[in-house]
Amino acid sequence: MFTGNRSIEVREFADPAPGPGEVVVGIRASGMCGSDLHTYRAAAAAPSSDLMVQGHEPCGDIVAVGSAVPSHVANVGDRVMIHHYWGCGTCPDCRSGWPQMCSQMEPRVATLNEHGAHAEYMKLPAIQTLPLHEKLTYKAGAAIGCGTGTAWGALERLGDVGGKTLVVFGQGPVGLSTTMLATALGASVIAVDISDGRLDIATSLGAQSVVNSSQVSDLREVIRDLTGGRGADLAVETSGATPAARQALDVVANWGVICFVGIGADVFFNTKDTLRRQLTLRTSWTLSTVQQIRCAEFVVRESLPVDDLFSHSWALDDAAAAYSWFDSQSDGKGVFELPPR
Ligand SMILES: [Zn+2]
Ligand SMILES: [Zn+2]
Image 1 (tube, protein in one colour):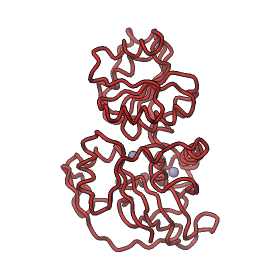
Image 2: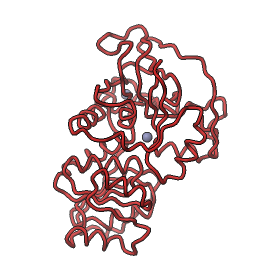
Image 3: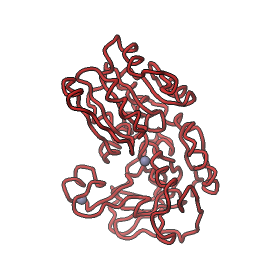
Image 4: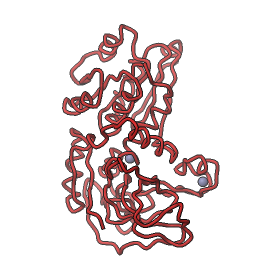
């Protein structure tokens, strides 16, 4: 649990039992996602007794199935990814695979109003489990559940990226995933970050060029030089930092399309200066169940090295050290790995 102001507590809970329509997943991998840090760094938002178990990138094996779960939906022993949101199940948003946008009830969100996956077990509706392909590791399935999946969602928002130049701002777990997936989709990626270590990982995942934005005086000029004087066709902003979000507007060419994924930036633009460039600005929030399946299939088909995104693996008891490390934001991705049960 995040108890506020970067403090962590490991607590004991009774093992959950599945109700009707539910399953319990024995967690094998639970990813650390950049958005965890917003909660980790904040003052505790709820009384200590109401705090939820953290971790919204779960992956594991089904260990118990409740009543009213058909055998074609879930069985003990199934390896599963998890879509970590659930809603009413019947409104247009839920039916289209976006339960996080449910219009009929307050969506249930692992870590926010439901317990998450930094635990031995997680209980959830059976239909929110998705099959984990035999070629994917548990930690790859965890990443596809949010960080890598969020990158996939953003690329689907951009549309056809093949053959285009794409600037990816921020090379944390989402940015690195964007670099990897977009390269496999045929884009020429220019990766931007302020950490040389992260830029090295971006190069290994296929980035055509890398730029340390803290060491250049005019990023727009650098991007122009790298794109034959035009500017980039596309940009994805994953850092959530206001300077990067504003630069995203600067580095694209006329008709450029920008997708904002990082949380927390303020983006302003002056219509007189910007309007004649015919820009398109989009936002993207994680991904749907359908996209999660599609992302996993693409990763398998292209044999993408999702496991290479992870630089650190931790045990649950090391949670305080793990988040203290992750807070520095200078390395790859972290994951809690648990033995089979
Ligand atoms: Zn709904
Ligand atoms: Zn996330």
